[in-house]
Length: 170
Image (cartoon, rainbow, N blue to C red; front, side):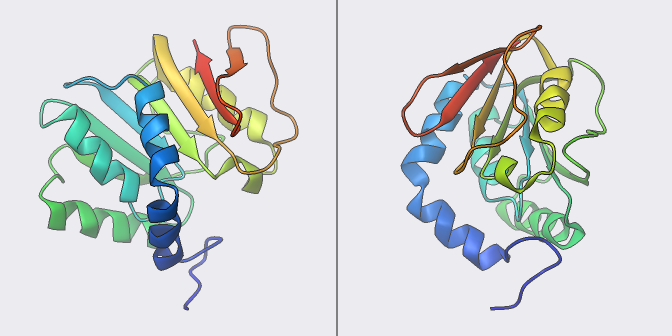
């Protein structure tokens, strides 16, 4: 298995995604996606989730994926073209703690299995909340505890499932 500059390669992420499909579907439900929505996937990897999310928002919506690893962004762009959704699915290389989007741009935002890899997950959570519209939804799934995540302020942080899925309303 060839390791990219990121933490894992895309084949591993594909296998993990298949294994965790039920969990993924629950995160999609929690962000309350509707046709025409603008959705952000932080730590998108090779675009596995963004392709699926594109089916939920439809051609009138937008899905953006961001990943720190340029190789993952390149692969995600190729997958979106192959799936025929590149007109409404876009990718950017970015640090999760400094997202390249306007405040309140997205209807919802999600991240899965990223926060345990971040040096300061609270910064990423703040950024996800910043780019999400008022009354939008931010859903984060993490496999391990993420030190530094906080409750309070404008961010409502409540655990809705035993498996460590957190729904954040803004």
